[in-house]
Length: 279
Image 1 (cartoon, rainbow, N blue to C red):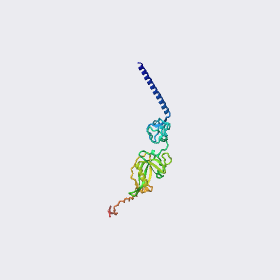
Image 2 (cartoon, one colour):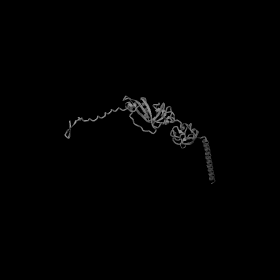
Image 3 (tube, one colour):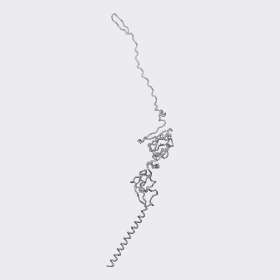
Image 4 (cartoon, rainbow, N blue to C red):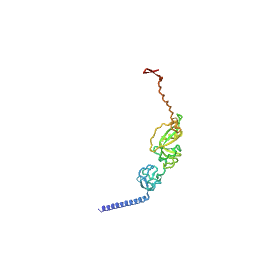
């Protein structure tokens, strides 16, 4: 009986010592962890995918705490430096946001982010005549006409090469419509990939000119082109169209009157009676 009680006490002491050791180890590890986490830094992380040129609002970001060695170079740690800015490029979900990912409103981004999906940017020459007096600015829509010599008919023809093309930039990197100067040296248009070939070929074969469209007019019109022979002569001189003279109509001839010889009348008196004789 005495041995059983002694064994139970020894077991109890062992349990207590084991529990104490566990507690001491837990406290030690917790203190170590707290000491390690004390050096962790906060970083701003995207809570969702943020498309390029989209304003970053509070619900699109979260604050994440991480060891310093896991923070990306240039990562932003203060959310106030991110909110209200625009994403320069697409920021993927859970990615740390860096200064290179941001731009402020009004900042001119690279032209590539302005090209609509499925389109290509291509530049054509501009001058006062070609570019509607230098009045074309970014954001306008234009039609492009090409004048070249038809290899089959051996005659110059003017055709509508492209319609309703948006202007992305003018001159040297001017991409804002508020710029005081219009197109003077070049215009950069957003066109379909196949239209880049057509524009380049037309520019090499002849001369290009653009016409400015109304912002409310998006209709695309099919045209067959015009040759010099089809232009009325009067309009070539800048005048009203000249029509061929209409021959004068002779007045109607007077009606022909029937000829009737004039007759003489003689009165013969016999007694009290008179008689008229016609000769």
